[in-house]
Image 1 (cartoon, rainbow, N blue to C red):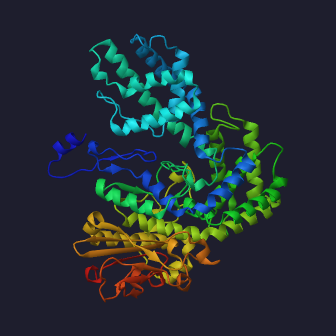
Image 2: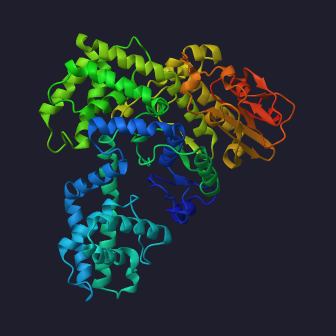
Length: 589
């Protein structure tokens, strides 16, 4: 494709992006000569940054105690893969097994292998496969694919009896371990190639159907860590990891797309940003859930909803709860039921698309309706609404940080339709509803006033104003954003661990970005997503370059700071929740 595109347009580089989900530790192949992926992995990297590691243990205990499901996502994913391979992909699985049986019969050393043994080994190999697929060629597997295969082999050996290990060794050789070009031209080579191709056509849908379309709806330690392209077995990651992937992207795929919302996401970017706050206040959330379950007792039937489905619903309500407290809940209830029915069927525990359990679904729908619309659900509805409002400012600040980071780290920011305002959508088709572009256009035409934007932060215009400001900076300084170096900055002082800071430099121009993370406890029951400057105390960013004595103006030019060798966070974030600075001599007047 690259050769053909370049021949058609030799004077201009036309970018090619691959919509590919990268597994943990997997990188995009550089020999493809593409410009990058569509950015699912960035969603994951940014999400890991915004989740506090201390939240996992209490949230996992809550989930396991009530749902009686595994707290380790990888266990849930493996169970789902087994179900998918024996169910909806059963025919495809059998085709691969039969192909491998034909390969075995062509070798005197393996012709006694039975179809049953090949099925057992093949299933465990796919169940433990850590990525969506490999790329076996006539030369066999490359080094990266070989590491993937060995990982799957090691996992399969832990769940297979030793009697099946020789069968695994046969699969390892047949699926790229021995290049098919080494076989004589003719039937034997054709059969081996066919087995490799069919195997790779099976592992991708097995991963998609088991993880995205099953396990994501079964496991809910924290739903903000369940989304397409996420390494859901991870709950959080150190700040150093975020800096490292940004530096790596700049070196290998500087034009890689950066997405935080897509047509395929399970929850909107600001829904996830709000739910991430629960990782900061997990003990509080555990108390809330226990209280809600008591209030919900009169709303349940004997069988619906299950404890797991009830806990999942509470998280979805918290994440998507409207910021407008005067909202009529009829439309909201319809959206939630559309999500709920899909979630129940995708999970394949109480219901499914192939065999809908109408009685159970009706019971869950009745519970949801009573919760949101009836007088008997008023106490529970009020309690959930109060909890949503309590974490909403921190969630909004996470959302603003998410937007700024997407537009300033190496890569090309991809803004999903309508996400200039808050995005509290759920899974499709909810995230594909019509966008009110006229409202966004009208808001964009109004000159931004920070005080007014902060006061009315719930309407989303503050997010749009941030995006507009930073896109204007990108337009004015394209080389700085595309080619500028990326340098993580050390933060010291009282709340150093709650600040992300980095600089970018190109031909003497400097870009400086400062955003908070884990902001919930810093907002101190705040009514908007602005941390009081005094809260930061002595927290400061160390600068690796000699800052000029001139004032550096940040977003909206409402205030200015004069950095020397250090920049006080209280000054950098004194007027606006997040900030970015560029050398004063290089800014547009």
